[in-house]
Image 1 (cartoon, rainbow, N blue to C red):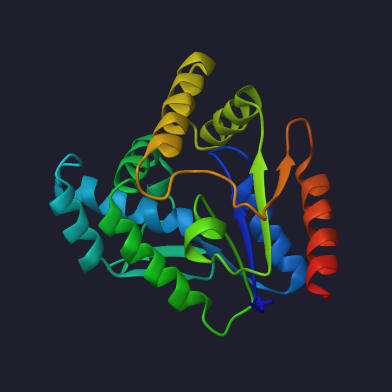
Image 2 (cartoon, rainbow, N blue to C red):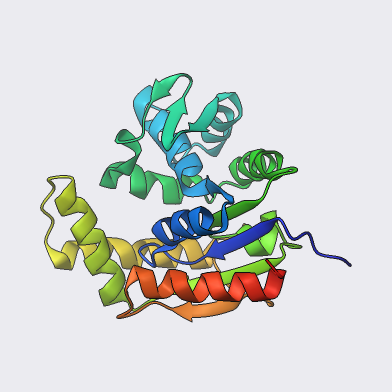
Amino acid sequence: MTRPKTVITIDGPAGSGKSSTARELADRLAFDFLDTGAMYRSVAWKCLETGVELVRQDQVADAAARLQIELANDRVYCDGTDVTDAIRTQSVSDAASIVAAVSSVREVMASLQRKAASGMQIVTEGRDQGTIVFPDAGCKFFLTASLQDRAQRRKLQLQQQGISVPMAQVLEQMDTRDQRDVSRNVAPLKPADDAITVDTSGLSQNAVVNLLESTSRRVLSL
């Protein structure tokens, strides 16, 4: 099977640097960036805003099916409302991990993601991009890092939002999310068989992007 050379996938656990790395890699390669995490966060935000009980998978699935998500100019819109900042809160982050385990939600999101990538040159990041959504992607990466490193990055993100959370709490929340992502029945977090695994522990973002850029150019003959 000939693989399309228009899709680069970057999967990995929370805090491994997927989003920032994918965004910069897309800029360097003049590709578009698809923020799939923002899509799941949008569903979570909508559920929290409208009082949908996260344990009611039928209600969560219905909310996802009805929701209009637009990603434009580095902004995220849900049914016309700019939620770019709202979806980055800890409560939405926790809820996103729960709604992402709903099979029908993943089906809706995967369909939207494939539609967004159709005919485009895309760098996309998430947890199932190389395994489920784009199994024939031309180049696949799986970013990982120690729990301590990932928690430190998350704590810094929260501090930049003016939120102070004890490191012990961040570690516990991230470990819980890891377990949920790895053990869910639908599209569990794992590297694709043909993904290139990169441990970002102790590495600067620039060093990680340099590695992914050189590898992408070599693999895809860019």
